[in-house]
Amino acid sequence: MPGPVKTEAIVLRSMRYGEADRILHLYTPDRGRMSAIAKGVRRARSRFGGRLEPFFRLHIELHEGRGELLTVTGAQTVEGHPRLRGDARALDAAARACDAVGRLFETSEPHPGVFNLLCRQLVLLDRRAAAEAGASGFTRGWAGALAFRLKLLLAAGLAPQLGACASCGEHEHLVGFSGAAGGVVCAACEAGSFPLAEDAYRFMAEALGRALSEVPEVPEPALSQVERAIAATLEHHAHVRLMPAVGRSG
Ligand SMILES: [Zn+2]
Image (cartoon, rainbow, N blue to C red; front, side, top):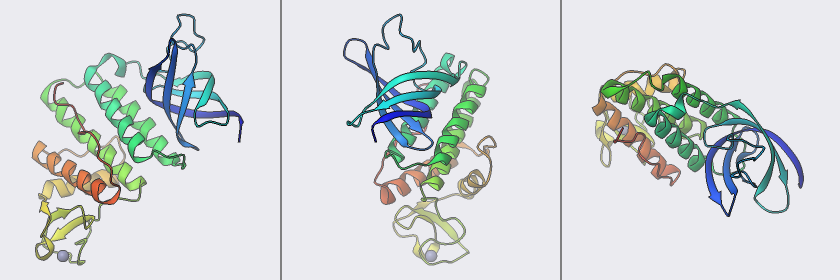
């Protein structure tokens, strides 16, 4: 329906277009992922200022024409996450979080829970930015990124089955994880699975059950297994591949 659209949105990506324009990928509570063009935004006197940049949470006004691309007509900042912008690792983590949302929820189907989850994750990254340096900060950042992905899986209806063997229902001797089966598997069903340690299992169960701010602490080998379990689930059930949850350079 052509006409004006007002919505909250997070800017997932912002790409230069032509002389002075930008194409934006937005994530909204009621209309899922949207694409929009912001005209003249790269001119020094643009009325949008710098707020049509990735990770801004905005009240945005758009005009919907007949094409798929809406036109931005107004924008006010709800949250700019200023600390995040000064921290390379936090910026990288925010980009990966936005990329994961854009890939997993790429249609206009509304998922307000996913919008709220992304808002919370960006606030947490902003709060933790600069406060967490060094190797322990890396591990905590990785754990936080995986907890976020697990909650995205839950929102997509793809949460791994953890309570019993995903193949046969057995409750004991759960030793592996199978992306094809969609969860943990027992010793009798482990063909095609990979080993899942007790602490990796615990991480997944706790991360799914807790608030995003309460990230369980486990050592890095367990985080590798969790990341592999998430990737295997997505590949088998959503045919989506995400970039690694954390960058290795920072
Ligand atoms: Zn089994």
